[in-house]
Image (cartoon, rainbow, N blue to C red; front, side, top):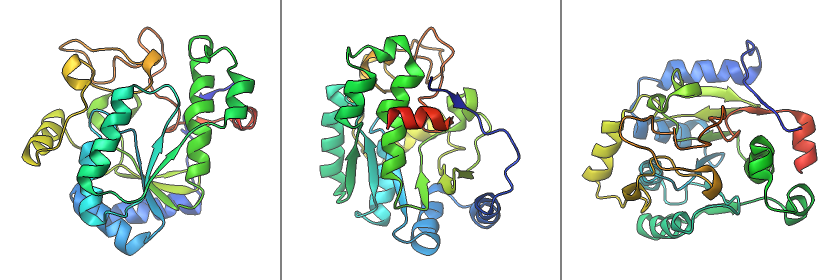
Length: 250
């Protein structure tokens, strides 16, 4: 059975030590300066942005494009995404001039084996995320020493105490917008005239796969529409996937 677990144990690895050193050096920088320092000085050619092309994704895509249009971007196409997301991806790639967007997804043979009736999301949501997102991302990150996410503390749940720089399974994970608020997000999108994901206007504030994404109502947390009605709050790419599950999904 696929299980995601939080990495709560104290990490004494060399990666953790480097994350601590990088945080001491760069944590006070704003998002663009932090990204530039890591991309140019610390991990040249070895850092990628992992983007969902979702509700808030345009910000980091815009920042990375300003640093270098060839900044590698990994897009996980689970095969269950909204068609609006795929169109939005194409719109942003063209508008921002991004030249290295890598779409990755599950192996067809793995899907046929683990989800032959296309209902794994309903039977075992963690298993579906492991198959369609976590394992493909593990393959895509193989060439990189660091990766960038768009997570923010105001999203709540596991993200409330999010650091800007952290260790993650032997790599450095960077959360440049960790301390941004909802108002910061809206102000940046407006200031730079960035297009909004078309589903935002329809009430979706966090956008993932079709069967596991719902609208939110005013007053709800930004991610409350994800896996509504269950205890699940993360797809798993930011949690640790047990080895036996990864093997079963690969």
